[in-house]
Amino acid sequence: MSGQHNKPLFGNSAGQETHRLTLSITISPYDSRANCTLIAIVASLRGEPNLDIEGQIVDIAGLTSAQEETGEHVIFTCGCGDPGCAGYGPVRASAHEELLEWSWRHGPHERIAIMNREQANAEIYNVLELVRVLASIKAEYGQCRAFL
Image (cartoon, rainbow, N blue to C red; front, side, top):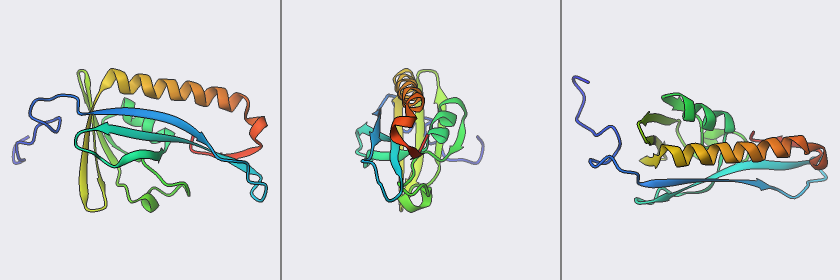
């Protein structure tokens, strides 16, 4: 990487995990006016430094592509479905051995999370399995707008 500064590939010089990804599903109450129930996957990233990611709606397509491909992915979004509305920039994802790094802008701040790749992949797999179950019983929820 000639001509670039010597920033470590994984955010800290020790190359250690700094954050833990937790995913869950939220289901809003049925809205009779809209004839739908909102089903959303939400993420939390806990660790040091605090990244202010607690219960943030994620786009499942961006989440799974970031798991598989290095590059920029739209992961964090808003309940309206517009990622820009939530104020998050695209996530730059990269993986190396047992670590997964996500970096993004939120407002004026650059954020970096370094996660255990196996733990993050297991979390994504588990929530996708739950999504499959929900999809198989979606008739129970009527027409849904889902971030799936």
